Length: 361
Image (cartoon, rainbow, N blue to C red; front, side, top):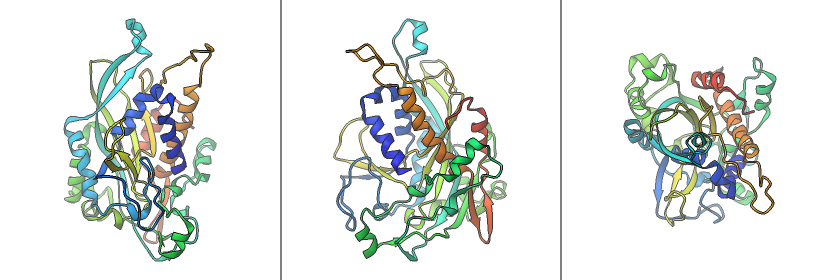
């Protein structure tokens, strides 16, 4: 998946990025900032090859409690996440080339699985895929192919050289222990914003306890370094309003891996010596998107030949295919709970999947 993420980064830096700007902006603003850095620093173990947009190796994962991650969502839960978008298709009826608007989304906790970080094995083999195997017995042939893709396993950060791995590095244990999980079962209108929900779970509210596995205080007390990199969470983003008023119904379901953090410029769409560490969107589902601008790339024509320069719809489809595959692997993973094996059932994922209205795979 880090290959897919790097490909996505390259896509959004190419000239076609302007045609995909609305979705690019949503991905940018919905990726939580975990920490701010005064500048890029080299890992003391791995070669000095860090770039903005590059994945952090495991030595660079900051010593930050999970509570700082959830805190980022507090403001957006109160006021909404603002995303500027441009509508090219629906603006034609108004006789305009483009209509710009500001859309606001509220984040809700959709799911979270935290695994314990074991550091008992020397790193001399590729990560094991078994803990996130996908349940295929009841899937359609379209979905079953996802289980054979090693997408999720390569989200695990690794040292950048074999020499470093052989000298001082330690691998993540293959038998990661599930510390905590929660899958939100309530309807959107009955939910609290993400940060408030985290606080409720940490307080061990009895109404939520029956829906949890493990100790909910881990949501606040654990450090990112305490976690196995296969730990992940999902956020449901529901629209609340847009300015100016107009059609605004698209909901997004984003997936974030706590083992896949990247450097990003502290300033949006401009170079900066200051950088931040973010947890990017690595998986996605959506619904109610028909007729809106998020998945409708702007058509371009080559100015010299009068022919389409590139087909952004094809590029968009490939990008969404990768994101949908990762979402499926997380939502339908097979995990170990003590001495038992359990198959994930992510209610929001199944809901979004049944209502998306089109195929990403």
